[in-house]
Image (cartoon, rainbow, N blue to C red):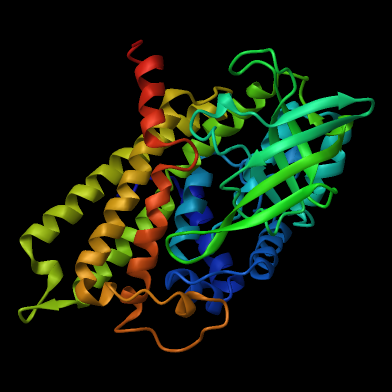
Length: 398
């Protein structure tokens, strides 16, 4: 599945690989490969290591502290990053609100927030989904009423990833109750330490605490924390979502997962032979690999268009659908390869402190966790059903 790279790009790949081999802690990489939890402190330490090298904000322009990389360089970095077992960069600050502030923020907002995002001094969460407004985000009901130099915010957000750890939330609120659908929505930056905010945990299928409910009761937010124009927050939301859905394709991650699947199939035995020799399983793996190759090429074309100033449209929806379906297919095949050893799922074994031996082998320890984790991939960032509606409307004009 390799692309032909020129000499400079090959040298860059070697540079990235050498950096990761030197700076990525081996214990951290092992935790990632085994599907174990990564605590906030480890995330912060690693992201600061990347920032010290100038490689944290891969999608930011150089003038704001980003890399200014070409599409191919970013592709190479993502591929090597996943191959090395580096932890996923927590996206809410550097990959979500950061680009929105760069695009729509005031000079004061850029000076205040961007350096702190790069230094990992602020931990962000996303206040989009609500109990009655998930994929149909434009129906959100959280209200923000102007009161002098502040907005008074009331409402509820849900499925708020890392909300229990966050210092700040970028939040969609309705500032014009009379406006319909996307109109009358604004984009606010809310300090999570403000009185009136309550965070309650939601325990997910894999037994982990990653997402939350967030309640906002008369929360006062300075008007200076409004990004973009009042009532025009949907423009910011669309800009963030289209780029988020492109990244959700997770090409580098899928390639690393596929390689791990092949390794598992090579060591697991059935009837005295490695499973990789089973013709039906080989055909299933080949089918997933061919789909991944196609998505990889489509992703590069979309990123190239974005680098030239375009904003991904229905293409990002297609990438989101296929990328998440491919990763779900890989995790299903992982459980199939491990067989009965995938059945036990011990939450304690995946915790921060556990350092004991895994059950059966490293593949069995990861299989169920990744399978359960990937169930939500086709829902977050806008469910795949909604993405199909976007494609039908924008491309098929239905």
